[in-house]
Image (cartoon, rainbow, N blue to C red; front, top):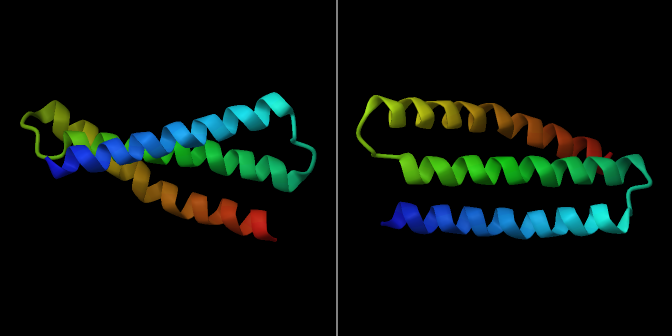
Amino acid sequence: MWNAYAAYADYYAALLLLVVFIVILVKKDIYTFAERVLLAMIAFSILILVAEGTTYLIDGRPGSFAYRINYLFNTFLFFAAPVMGMLWGIYID
């Protein structure tokens, strides 16, 4: 049950970031390199939040399909963390 609450929190955060992403695109406030990197960070954060929410929902489900999907998303999250750190480092530099 608690996994579902964590998944809903991740999906809600992804939805809020999607609204921010759309507002930035509609206003066309993308002029500098740092603003483009910020937009990439927002998009990547949305992907990470959706993947993490999905792993919360799938965790503990029986079957090989659920195991493989959970393994795939966890592998993505493992490799996504350094990429997000790299984007953050580029943004603050």
